[in-house]
Image (cartoon, rainbow, N blue to C red; front, side):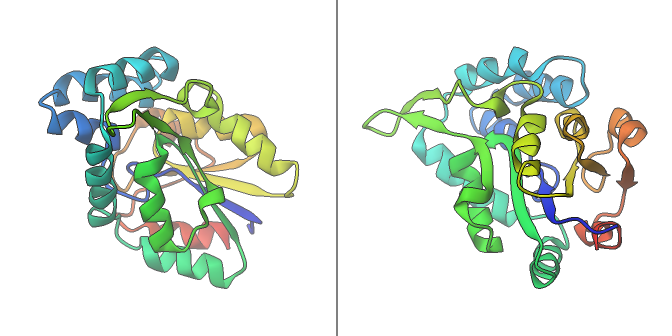
Length: 213
């Protein structure tokens, strides 16, 4: 199969970490927040039931977001750079579609040569001192079904699209007519393994290449 647009989740797909959980760990709130993240990714809770909740607990300031941006890059999944380079060499359009925090994901995208306007994630809002103020509550990616909305938007301009990710929210891309590849190289989730169109368990992201080219 060959796709015009290749979309990647970020957390546990491009990078080994779950960003919001790591921000929580930094604040001594890891267990509380990770349980909420996991419940959402496994489809036990709706994303909107945990999103505001987690950020209200953590209140990540600008310094925390900069710290997370560096962690995303340091913990990049094996094979990510070569995978993206190969896709770019084959003239594929690459987007990141993530329920994560956009300012933390942008430096990783930049390192991979993915333009800022192809990064779909949730903006964090700070006050003038760089303290946490809020997040973009209108963002489709802070609620269930958001990834399907972004994929639908992309499919208006492109014929074929694939979504690669590890969680329940990535499966939603199928509702927009996208092909969905589950990536189990970091976390294996039975629901995703069962419902994805294809599933890879290799530790390297390069395992998806034969499925998309």
